[in-house]
Image (cartoon, rainbow, N blue to C red; front, side, top):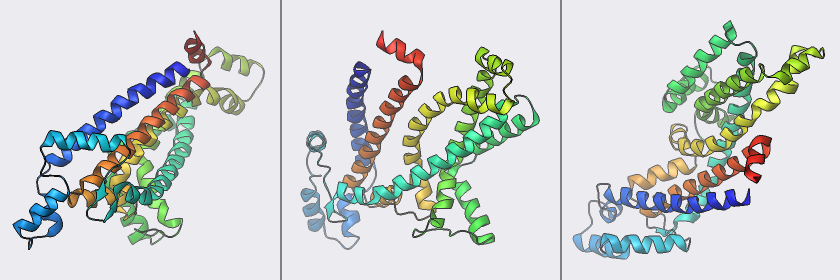
Length: 309
């Protein structure tokens, strides 16, 4: 297992280098001059040229790239000229709100997805199974921003049960978390349904039934336990995707996380903040992937035996 973790870490180094390079090219290929955007339309050419030199944007592109990589290796992500402070400091200030939203959405998706998948997988081909299958397809088909708008129209403006935006109470977290959890719930439900259906055909389930156990005991005590192995691993992989999807959801609900920060940074050509957010999320996704691999080996004895051999 140690060799596997080391190998994943080495691959992760190249992944982070690739992510850093891609975001460097993208932010500089975007139209608009950061200095002109920051100073406004009344700025003179001399003022724009002075700020451009201060930001180091007057250097050749390759020289900017080498300097940028050197700063990243030193964990120096630059200073936000718009906020007037280190970019990573602003990112870490917003990170807890995004983490809260992501963890809550994960909990909602896992609970709802397991329940739907368990009910559908226990009676494959039945009416409930068909309804759940159709519902999961619909959950994955709807755009996230559209789901958020619909939830606001129904529960905030129509029924007036929940706040439509902002923070302050647990109620403010409900709509953005449910919106973010929609596609993830469908993934967990479909995976659980498939795993439970396969587990119910295994010999150990037939043995449990022959011992006189009820269907509920067989399902919850035997089939579900083994069906959780792929679900646990997919949760680790999808949490990284949820953090990326939170960018849209946070802007729909005015949630003060990384999403609103990076949108403002892109609009103002704040390279340092955009790069810091992107690399932080890339690093989190890489770590979660490694954790998911380790959990999969720990939970599945067959994979654990292969890893040791």
